[in-house]
Length: 324
Image 1 (cartoon, one colour):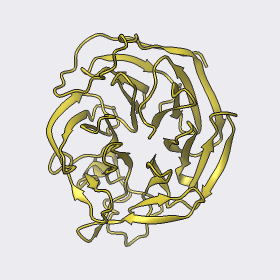
Image 2 (image 1 turned 120 degrees about the vertical axis):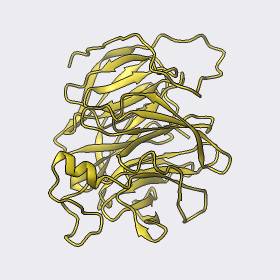
Image 3 (image 1 turned 135 degrees about the vertical axis):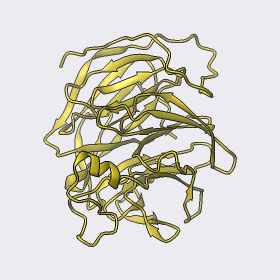
Image 4 (image 1 turned 60 degrees about the vertical axis):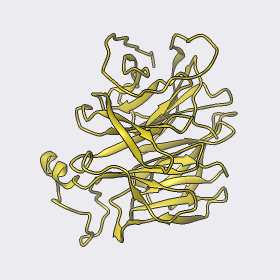
């Protein structure tokens, strides 16, 4: 598939952004080669997480499976079936796969052998809506999860999360009220709500943070991609402060490269913004994207879940910051 890149100018105001401390001169961001398709035939791919060797684990959520893409061979093989309908995922420093298992509103820790334990499934005794995405602070090990309300067809009739069903677009927006971002401190089994009011009437979705553990980016999903993306300061106790609008565009899963550029997945593909909020690139997948992560041995492979029936990738001239 031929790549199509769009470069735009302009500043979409942001305060409190992250910039790298590298002594290397700033690299002009570009792709290397064309978009490559690795595997097709899935129902809805999501949740790409990169391990310490550059391999990617991703979900086929409706089919309740996790697959592995091998960075050395390019092979895609099954890893786990029966995943709690896992969505967003990330690896912790011990090599466990942390998964947003939204079937019963749980956060799972999946060991390398496929066994799992439920880390948390409620906030103040009330079941979570359905954890969507997770970012682990590489400095502290604390976890941030987004918990929007996307009604699922497989929920039971008496499920308390199931509102205004079947939804129209406006009804689904009403059903989404109550979404929040939560923090799980290392060793804790109790969530702390770190946003309140800002996201109560919308769908907090993608989340990514800076490698110094000081800033967190969270976007909101909207059908026209205009939900927006915000940046927060991370305090010593894991709570958030100094919320500022980063860009007007929202979306789904996000990643970050070594220069602090933010890669937002949405119906346009993967849209890249620099740390000041300038839109600098759109990677067109020919059908949108749900998530993305930097992977491979050199950490320059942008692995994309999307279009939704496949997984793709494109080589970049910069590295990511996701691996522990």
